[in-house]
Image 1 (cartoon, rainbow, N blue to C red):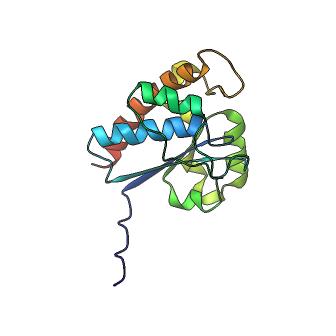
Image 2: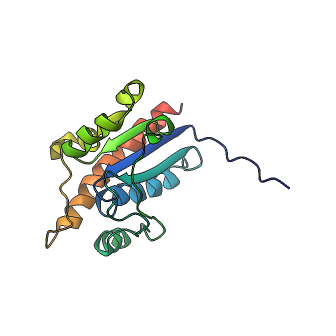
Amino acid sequence: MAKPAAKKPDYAVLMVCTGNICRSPTADGLLRHALQAAGLSDRVLVDSAGTHDYHIGDPPDRRSVATAQRYGVDLAELRARQVTEADFASFDLVLAMDDGHYRQLLRLCPPQYRDRVKLYLSYAPQFGRDVPDPYYGKGDGFEKVWQMCQAVTDALVTDIRSRLR
């Protein structure tokens, strides 16, 4: 017997960073967690990707996983992938973690979908424009990324809820 087709989500969000192992999976896991808590997870597809193919198939960085675990969010099942041109048709919102990603996404994006590409921190402008890459840093870089992602997630859930009414 054929498996029934999956229901198309009412809304879809893609977060994009460089290798899809630090910033974007943190944002991905946190938004999934918040949408679950808000009762919206069955209506919203959340995913993440990287602009580069450095880590395809790899789990998130262990430091991202550990930071998320401290807040009760599980990133262990996520795997890195590279953004594709097809993603722009599939996702209603494509969020770039920094200006460099934003420019790369606009170069890859078909013209009819460019309005879907935005800076992630446009939802929390008090932090500036770029979510810093914690990969090579020491200390609290992953915690700072988490705090930025938490602020964006709160605003995103509010925005998504209003779009789904």
